[in-house]
Image (cartoon, rainbow, N blue to C red; front, side, top):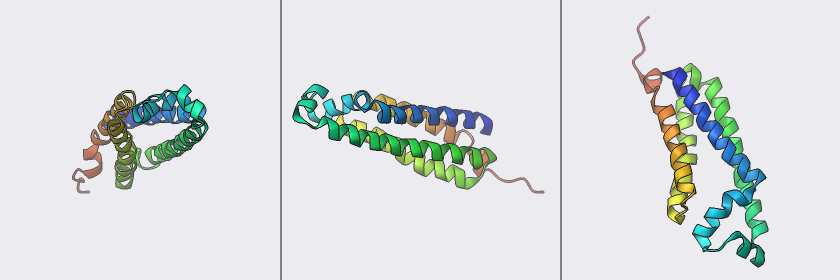
Length: 144
């Protein structure tokens, strides 16, 4: 089960990485639905008010933060998780849980109909990958 979970978590990290890169490279695509959900305004209306530059910069910063979290996740996955080290499982639970749960809660709070399903998909992949091998991390150790 641990090998399957590692593959699932690779998919989850790749999924998060793609979204992170979109936030850095094409922030307007990522923030379009959130802007509409929060303000009721389109990107064109925000551009007219002069807010678009500030919002794009903020989205790029969030994308960069998410990308560094994804890179750290790959490190944790390959250094500790695939070897069933408990610290790696807890690291994924805490960091991954905060990242995916925050994205989901924020999407629900603002009513973003694009962000909610994207975050829910990521959260489900994350939970399956984390909980599938739980016996490998916390099961009884065989006596030697």
